[in-house]
Length: 163
Image 1 (tube, helix red, strand yellow):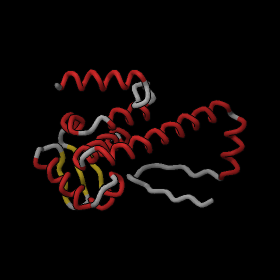
Image 2 (tube, one colour):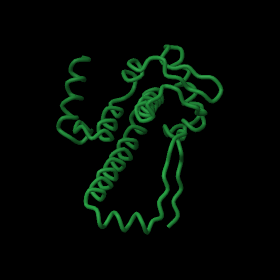
Image 3 (cartoon, rainbow, N blue to C red):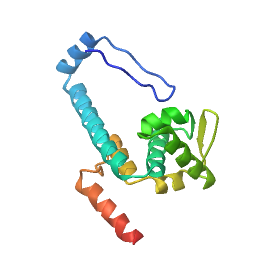
Image 4 (cartoon, helix red, strand yellow):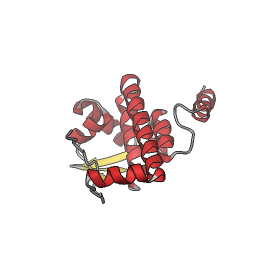
């Protein structure tokens, strides 16, 4: 079965023949466990993205994606086009361009042809929907994900505080 990959940002990657991977997954319980945790994290991210795309605005989704991407890449500068970001965020390019313009006007990000720069991470996090915390904690494995009691309690506390 062929698979397609999308490389979001430049960086280091490894390639491994599938036969070697299968051999080690079945013979190493620690590796098997890590891969199962990764699969669970990916499924949670997929489900959370589907919910996010249905219920949150383009500004919230763009803020979420930029915030999480910056955490994973350990960078506040990305070489990305609005077209590519629209694919990642799940919206039309025009909506993402308008959302980016809003974030730029508020001083949260800046961009020029093919480059986005986060200027205010704190504000970006505030503008992101709660999906950013749910997905971020699932990826980090800190137990406060969307499906965990800790994650639900944290969201309820934030919602109560903002009223």
